[in-house]
Length: 509
Image 1: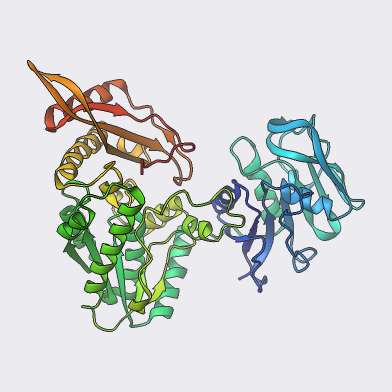
Image 2 (image 1 turned 60 degrees about the horizontal axis):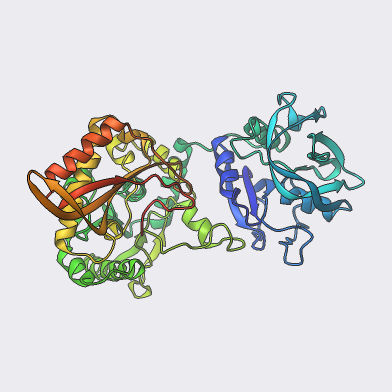
């Protein structure tokens, strides 16, 4: 059905945020690189052009072929997109003489459905170094700010709207209303994209696609793989075979606890304890990327052995979500360029000869949780903090030993249990402990100690792309620090990480 939105990505750091805002309006959208337009555009009822770190005047600027879009469907051009439309429609774009970054007020707003219900002097967010000095001859000015004359315009004959501010960011106070005006009132899109609708259509598609074939899914205990498993279970029932591998780097007691929870959910899950294989393979290795690769290889070997025990399996299911898909086809390699290997273990070999099914590949993390709630997955599963695929291996800085793993498991257990007991766990996106490769002098009783230091980390976020450290209560921090030092042999110092992402990452390795 033609009820979708196409977002063309020119490399803006805000492109995913545009998609999230559209989805919040219960409208389905997809992000595609500007240079990889779908051949069939019939399913799209509107197109949004994103911003970009480039200038339209630069030789290397993104230059899409919009011939099959302009005049065929409504277009909302944001920042670079607006400048692109203006520049290649007879207008003039030039370097700005004034700083056009940060908050601004829409000083004049024309009467138009695009600004219906938007307040006078509404606050918007600017972020550009170029500006539209002159509009195309056939364009109509819709709004200005004190410093930006051509803040918004439209080309009525082609149903194009251009804005030099960002409606998708929080600082544009009525950005959601502006997006809704464009998508619903101007483009005629229906607000039907809901978790219930997703479950219904996805289960139907999975049944049609898979039929009576067997499917193998590697469960991690996390939200994504759990929701994927329950979706598949609803679609194909006993034909789904789940494998949960213990790599010896999970949280304390997690292997058995997760297996017990899955059993109560009615899933067909086999637990495989391969702790010794992983820890032996990691012995002596301190490099973070090499640790990841070792864990990935051993996982593939173990998973492959188990998969071969399931006769006539034809499909491999994965809990891939939309940010993973987007980053793998980044338009410019700019904002989403790889910082390190992805935490989730993936990349199963071709020799397994299984077709891949990814039921969540069009969902953001918060949407996955909403779908999980629709599927009536228990809150303790849906509310579980993200946990990296390599597990505690990337929270132990330096080489891995069973003794270090045991220490960190105990520290992590005290920290996470404390967050739960104090009613703080659900207010946090992700939390954990890091074992540092340093020792410090301490005093316990009448004796001096020379033992390990651990760092605690707790962040708040929506999707993990950006994150702020959480201001935990001092009383809580005091209690947790005392409990760790008193209860975990080998640790005599606790510190708290107050770095945000960016510039830091959530994990330390």
